[in-house]
Image (cartoon, rainbow, N blue to C red; front, side, top):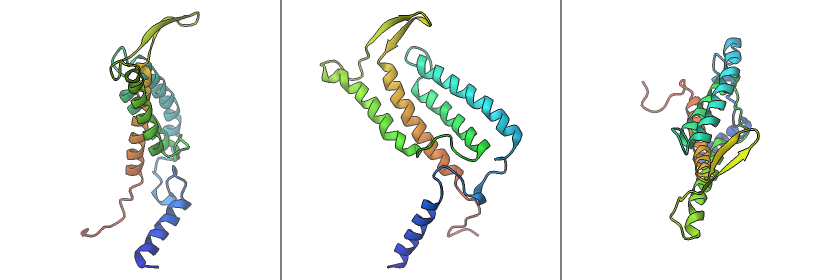
Length: 174
């Protein structure tokens, strides 16, 4: 086996030993066990997630939508990871990206297949005893696809930045 293949196999084995969303002990943040951060992060996590749901729900008729809601969820999940040392998600975030893109694309494609313009939205009104009258729209499905793609991409980028070890040296460092 060539030296390059041995090095690649060694890196792959090391990566397989680590849980996908848990930092190795040598890279753990100094605030992981901080009781104040953990306590405050629980309340902040819940509030950020509620606001994200509101922005996602109202986004097709008012400011907000899937992109902003996705960024808010990314910030809540990064805060959770900073406070607890592990991710609240139990899957690789990069796996969310194709699902979100597929949902957004298919939401736009369905009206086109029925002879309408691409991304034409259908809407109507539903009345319930709990909420009263509210509007439903297929634009929410598009926003949901954008939301899932943004959460996947944002978390993938943030987790990649979190796992950078600043003590590593590369060629050209003095």
